[in-house]
Length: 167
Image (cartoon, rainbow, N blue to C red; front, side, top):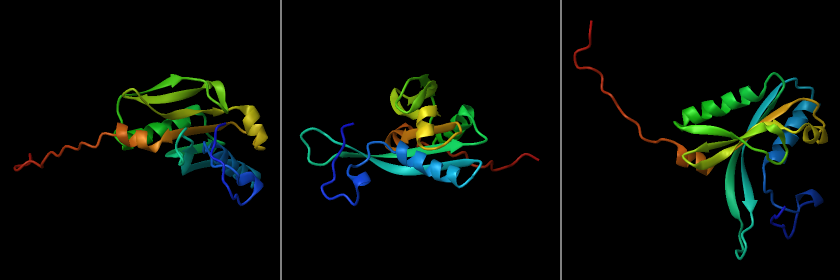
């Protein structure tokens, strides 16, 4: 992975800036799983840093990431994401099957609206979950916050109450 190296890291594990928020979400889910929580559903607004050739500073993007395990399935995660999209008045979105890092092939989809990629939704690959010490099926979605706001419909219409209401 092409990442930004920190000159004076606090520790050996923190020598680079993260290019994806998924590992931190999986670590939080693993802590909950190890504390014997039968069900967990978490979210985080996280920054990701992507280096740009010829520039001193990396591009910083904000991601909304959510993860869950226990009494849930792919459609539970999809329902949570659809509720978020409905709350933002994002319309005409669609899901396209893709394969992506850390996600189970055949159980992963890309969310698109108006030709823009909003994010990814899927089940974490069992080997990845096992690396974090979780013996449950994990479902996550990641969305680019800027893309979500660009796809959101901010136009609101107001209908006044009738002057003479019906009886």
